[in-house]
Image 1 (tube, rainbow, N blue to C red):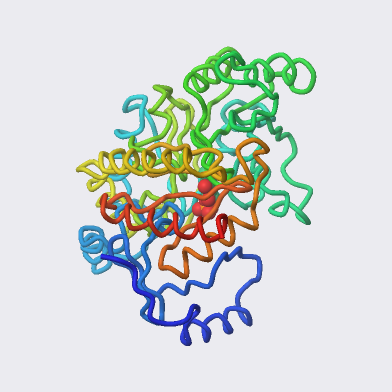
Image 2 (cartoon, rainbow, N blue to C red):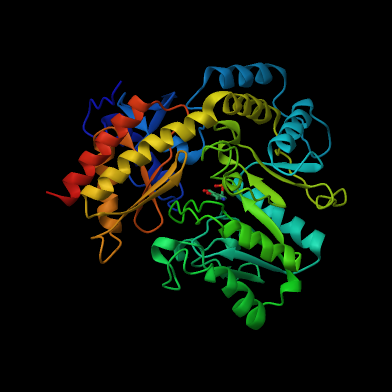
Length: 441
Ligand code: PLP
């Protein structure tokens, strides 16, 4: 199967929606190309003009089981016929309790944990910020340069990805400090792994904790196990063990934002499992319910021990979303996580060949189907080329591949986890063509 583009893009129907969008929709969104999506099946999506695209985005790392997986559709239909909503704030839902038990089972750290359900990644972060302050009674929070945790005020305060996301909205939450992420391709300390000896961890203890922040007043460190919007950056082996040691030394909570990296995307249920480290709190959303809105955070019962009324959400843990999540997890556990690992390896092997061949491929990194290709002017200067990356995305779109960027100059590959070798090869072929047209012509 291949993409099929029948019209000039955007097509005539798409143009009509784009005009309405311009008139009636908030202009705050970032759209990289005019794809007006109407239908999806597996790894394929169709726009309103019937053009068929291969999806390397999965609705921004959301549609883990592909579009409209029959088992998820069946679960949604069955629940929709019974009940849409009654509010988990004041009442009990059967599916919510069943899903909570499952989430406690699949997150590392034993069964003595509790779950809070919400509707999005930002809400999971927002709730976790409240929980860590409530539990530790400490004011300060640490997050990372390049991180993305969402756009509500608390989550936005932790975010350190692009200044435009914050411009005009200050003052934000006080007491948030950003530290360097282990982005070894562009180490902020100009050091090299492993001879750096994790200076970026020492820096927290020897500089930040001595000069800026009393560690006994730090409630938590919020970290993406693989940085998502910041550029699909994978920390080096050993980093998380060191970070965890530091947290334990000062009794600082370790909060894993697995909103993008979780739910099987990296070839493990949670990305942090690649390094054998447990978090105190896991924040989930995106892939959890195959596209239905659902977020959650999971903490040890001793931590999630707040009083009735301290946190709640009308829509959180909606029964249809919970039914979709149960079906999603079943599919993940029955082959999709392994598939993510297998196809991810296949894609990276191909990309590493490109890296040898093309001077504009600076770095190839990733785990499972969370893969970044950092594009540069040339390997020596490592100069980012965001305009060229944008041109590549547009060309790929015109050729029938939906793919996005992240960070300053990185192309991200995050297809549904059901993708096959053949489908991945088609996407890579189109992407290579688009890259060559932009860089070699
Ligand atoms: N955390 C991470 C790691 C994310 O990638 C995102 C969204 O991209 C969020 C949080 C925010 O999620 P949402 O857009 O559902 O609020």
